[in-house]
Structure formats: structure tokens, C-alpha cells
Length: 336
Image (cartoon, rainbow, N blue to C red; front, side, top):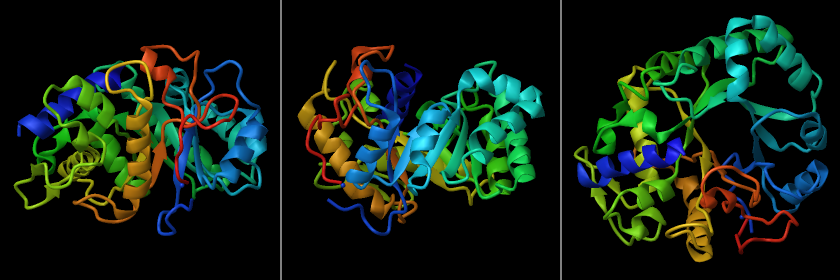
């Protein structure tokens, strides 16, 4: 997948260029809910599982009535995507954004939609990239007209849109991130965060020489020393801070980041084991309340993914990112 190549390139720069209870100070530690499995539990059963495990946030990749109805009144914070195949129409037709808002926001006033992600992992060298910003603008206009200005509109990007080492030198790539500076400035104007998909797994497996402890939150000391005095003990922080620096370089200093995906597979390829997946995801849960060296404040984060998805396309690892199996049994122990 694109994110695998991008994470590998970024990691090379970073290294060689060289939930018992969710922490109270973190507003939302969420889990992404994918549905590419057979069989899969009903949306109502999935929501009950979220509630029983104390998971306070969810990301879904396409709005649908069953899931939204199941979430009604639960208070679970939601990221809902406008999938890539719908973005162009929304960019060219404000009426498409208005209809989407009527169908999936106005119709479900009891659902706590926190962010709308217009597009997922669209890179600047793709034709679709030019449609992201106008689609975001049309979505914001439709939300405002319907009285839902509190919902923030953003787009979800992967690490390949950034470049630079050390993290403080991060900028948006002139190729894969060419569309990002205007989007960053628009986010600054609207007060919305950038949604970032951050995968140390792909960086580790795609870049020879990275210490797996640096990728798994288990390093005992500094691995990367930035020339601004900040020290990095894990790859996740370095990747997130590269995003922060890229936003700053684009003139969007005040734009925050929400990690809209991060996870580690438990099978399917090198280093994809149950023990590594457990170590990474537990480390992530335990870590994000502290933020990063550059921004040491709670970092809203969504783990990928809730379920192992046996019908997901792509490499074998893509089927094994779940914290749970489709029968809702735990894939391994995680302390929520």
C-alpha cells in the first residue's frame, strides 16, 4: 500500500539522515472500525463491545445508517470518512455535500461526530488531490448551513506527504505533499486538526537497520537526537513531530494533529507477530497521554483496527491488524 512505501522513506530519513482505564487527560482513545470481514458482527454488537471495553472513539470509513443508528446516544466520539470515490463529486457539486450532511449528520443528531475526513491517504501526485480542498470547503459550508459548525472537517494523510530529517526539519513533500500547504492554511482558518495515519510498522519493515525496540515503544533511551535539542525514544513520536514541523513550515503553526490511524499487524509478514502487535498497541495506549517531544500534551489517537478483516484487499498483513476477531473474542490481551 502507499502508506508502506511512504513510511519506509520517512523512516530512512528519521534514522539515517540522520485500556483497564483510558487516561483521564486524553479526550479520546479510539479504534478504527473496518468491515471487510466475513462474518462480521452487527453494528449494534460492535458498539456494545466498544462500550464494554471503555473505548471512547471510533473511526468509520464510510457513513452508513446501521452504524450511525447504533451510535445514537452513546457519546462515542466519531470520525467519519467521505471515501475517496465520493470526493470529486463533492468538490464540484455543493449539493452533494449538502445531501451528505442531511443524510448522515442532520438525520442523526444523537451521534457525536467529531471530525469528517474528506479523503483518505490521497497524495499530491494523484489527480484526486486537487479535489480535496474544494470538497472540504463545500462540506464546511453545508455543515454551517445546517447548524453543525462544531464538527471539524479535515483530510486523513499518510507519512509520505512529508519529508525532512531530523523531525524539526519536516516539510511537505514537493511531490506527494504538493497539495498540503493550502490545506494546512485552510485548517488553520477553520480551527480543525490535520488527521495523520502514522505507521512505525511500515517504516520498520521497509527500512533496513531500524531497531525494532525504537518502533515498538520499548527503547530504554534516546535513539534519535534532533538538532533543536529534542530527543526521540520511539519512531512514532518522530513521525508525528515531522508532521508538526511540516505544518509549521507551511505557515500553519497552530494546527493540531489527531492520529487517525496507527497499529501493528499480528500475522502475515516480517515482525507481524502477536507479541509485537500487543507491545506496540499497548505502548501506544500508554504513551499518547504524554504527547510528543515537540508538543507534550495529550494526543488524540485512533488504533487501527478493531477487527481482523479476512476480506481486506492488499498484502496479507492487512487482514491482521485487529485487536479483536470477528466473533468479538480478543486477538490478544490489551489493557483498555
